Image (cartoon, rainbow, N blue to C red):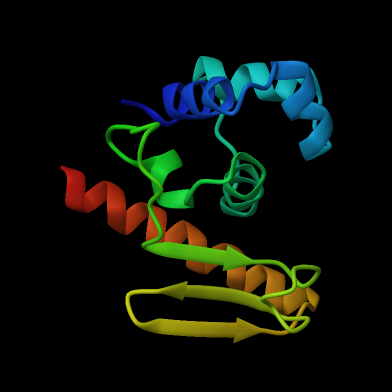
Length: 126
């Protein structure tokens, strides 16, 4: 199932309309509709935000098949404002915890980490 279908299914599973999710993410409804139509795709950082809002793992959004009954905790991402982060950007998964400072460079590295994990996941599914 493509990324666009996973976003749509996860949103519906969470009981949110496109308008509600777009408002929570701070994006336009047009942007969310393009994601769900497969015309464009969210960045790695936006995928994390989507996952946090929809209370699923980023892996579930990029998975070959979205399972709305599964709560996958293989990879967890925290932003500085969460209680689990101690003010840092945090990735936990596969027995690893990576903490980066919430600076411009930290966000850049965090985004690269997420995109690399997504690409690795796609390669493993092919």
